[in-house]
Amino acid sequence: MIEKAEKKHELSKQELVVLLQSDAGEAELAAAADRVRSTYIGEAVHLRGLIEFSNICRQNCMYCGLRRDNKQIERYRLSEMEIIDFARKAKGYGYKTVVMQSGEDSYFSVEIMTRIVREIKKLDLAITLSIGEKSYEEYKAYREAGADRYLLRIETTDKDLYEKMDPGMSFANRIRCLKNLKSLGYEVGTGCLIGLPGQTIASLADDLLFFKAIDADMVGIGPFIPNSDTPLWGSKGGTFAMSRRFVALLRLLLPDANIPATTAMETLNPNARIIVLQSGANVVMPNVTEGEYRRKYALYPGKICVADTPAQCRSCMGGKIAQIGRHVSSDKGFRRKRVVF
Ligand code: SAH
Ligand code: SF4
Image (tube, rainbow, N blue to C red):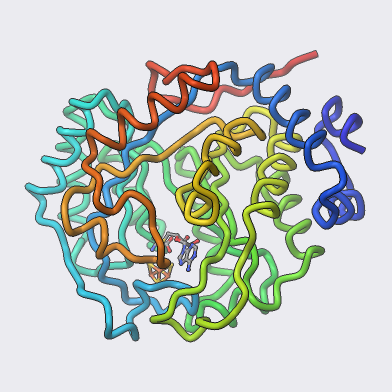
């Protein structure tokens, strides 16, 4: 099955279930994904500087520490000046892309957001927005202001589970948002959580097939890590091993997509990002948010590097990437569609 997938980049749902649930072929699976990554993408690793600019959220996702009903969290919102300043500093550390992420914070109107995007574009940075569900018109306005990419995880393709996990939100609207983003010419990033309560292996296989079917430009996945400030505290959560297998399968199915080794994985295994970079991934998103804000942007507990500075994160990742014989990319890291015969 792994050999077939390495050549054809296709697997059936049944095959995906078998490969996801067994750890028997884990090393072979990771090695095959690493070869596909090397053939299609090469040895460059794209670094995206993550700016967590507000932890205020109108949504109430069951798994997330930023959910509106969480009264324990200290809320913050960066000013326009601070956001632009963090982007400028990111550029100074050598980043070519910034990812601007927040809760669904209504303070950031279209007018404010487009002003920020236009200012950051003047720095010649690629911009990824990750600010949740918006109308077509809003997405259009951000795109026209210069946003290049948008990251909106589907979280799970199991409609019933999605609507249980994200009360007040609809699966149909999430899909509509992804379609709108694609039609507006964004590079579309999506992804899912691994290990949500009630999520099955068959459902994870469906997630993989969904990412392939929509030809996602970027797929970021993370283990669900239970948060004591949420109703899902006490549930089991996802594992590093399953997340790694999922990334390897993603690479086999989507050979030229951008696939990050995510921070949540590193919370479960101190060497996760390097292991996952060698199991199919080609992107890392180091944090460029400064000071107390890092700690306060608490989607899940045990977030790594909360006491580090952006400069430390940049040099730490650069060192780790060099140690595995890879290098930090010097371009903006748009997806390059490749056909390899
Ligand atoms: N509000 C935006 C972006 C911020 S949330 C949005 O929801 O799209 C970014 C991601 O954090 C979510 O997509 C979710 O997959 C992840 N996340 C939230 N809570 C988490 C948890 N407890 N464990 C792991 N990842 C989590
Ligand atoms: Fe808000 Fe995003 Fe967290 Fe949901 S996942 S509560 S939308 S920050």
